[in-house]
Length: 380
Length: 260
Image: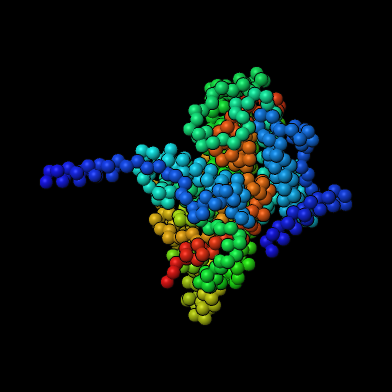
């Protein structure tokens, strides 16, 4: 039963995406993009020199990519976004930002985020002739090996290199931080090099005083950041959810409280006149309201100004998580990437090889104009 | 007199200075599985990767990280309980929790032809029926669907609560069923709904009250890539889960349930 439903799900996904292309223009349907270097690997049945075997490329990009695309198309179809009349974004970033805060579109968000991350990662890779380690199964001794500090590949673009050195100290320090961050992820996850804006998104919006330029984020620093599972790197579109839920709850509680006060006053007034009406007002207090009211009283008792803040407070108060983060480089360190070619013990070898395969031209193209952190920016 | 106490002292010194390191436990019929794999579930290579190599990876890392520390002589189970709340020891928690979960997981399987001869006990089915799971087929579907529908690495457990009722829980990544604060059942990456928010607040409340957790796992499903990638490929999770169910040795599962 389980198996049947599963395989039928997949075939439906493929069929419908074909149908959508032919028949309906209102339905948005995604396709696996063409990545030139990977298409070459596939057509020539060669290896991805310096990093992946032919089989791995097939598994990681063509098979997994296709199953993510199918999953995305299928969840788009199952949710009513297509039929609800609202415009469905036809690119992944817009789709992500329009679904990331909506629990009802969890599936759409997850698939589009995974697809975006995967594509972002493979696009900044190129085959390399210099390899640190052979693309081969590693043995337990790999865990005891000394770290490798020799490397050949590094950014050629002078501005980008300067910016990396100013942000991290040197290229080798950046490499160590990047690869160790990737190594620290135990499950699925991606390590990113991002350009961080100087102000949070809300500050930029609040301080808007005419002039288009001042509303654009200014990028001052480069940072290394990890995201886990289906996480999306730009926090400016995600943050504030937990806090919003708390505010909603407290607003609801406050409304109930004022309602309760009103009722009490009314009761007091009416007590003087008749006794029959008071019994009816009491019965209108539903059991649900009663539990919430008792909850209010409990919360009132528990408020303690001396304890350290909660996750919501952090969510609210850390300006950082509202900052615009522009991704430049992605390193996927999920186990699937190294298990096939490098084996259980091969993560470090894989990461050393990934560094050699970074396509710095692509990274340089993604890099925004750098804003020097100067006092002049105060006078904007 | 002096001599005796001296020897006793020497004995104690030997005992306290005993060094130990974590190693891969030997499964029943392990030698046979290394050669032939587990029929219906793993090839020889697949079994070696999922058990011999991965467990070696976990236990070797555990030895490296705990050597010379208070955790050196503890079992993975004790270490995972000991480190679950320590924010600076989460890397050790990872290896301990994974090593324990993976052992619990691998003990459950025998070749398909033998597994067919075992059945879930009446007690187990009866307990499941209290949880709105009327038959084995429904149980299978619930467990496997939860395992297949989660994004990323993780575990699905059937657990027994202190009141002896059963429950299915999902643990993301290296989550453990033994402590509610480290179940890691929530994924807050996408939209956060009110249920998750309340659950989160509930956890905080329980932790603040120092509530203890006496949950015990009965059946474990490993959704980590390490468990299936070699034999089933990146997109083969559904096939793997389906095969896995057919190789469960129910005699092992039945014994894990609390017997009156």
